[in-house]
Length: 119
Image (cartoon, rainbow, N blue to C red; front, top):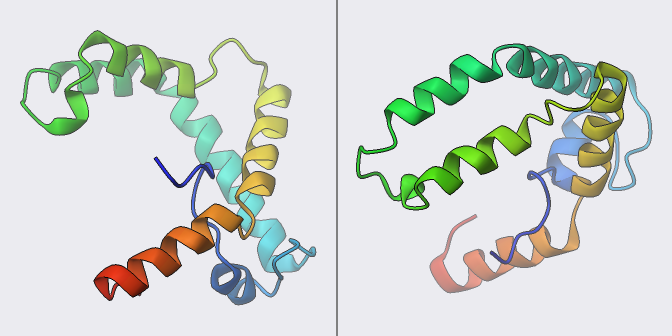
């Protein structure tokens, strides 16, 4: 996969949060970080239920489940269940930091725009 950022966090999204490509602190960007942390920690609390639901869909034939049991193992890893809550906060902040206006994301968006007319 060309895009290697944990998630898409473009300049435009940062501008909406009154920040910039470097992630300059702002009230809205700080609130975004808080919401990301809360969301991750909440999902983590329900990880076993989420994993069970995904396991139930494993034989559905959807392309995202082609990996079989490996799909479930990878999902479980993404919850980082062995980390403390404090370590998870640091993890989420580092995911946000590495997603900030990522060069490869910008290049992929450019590629999509040129090749497919997708904005």
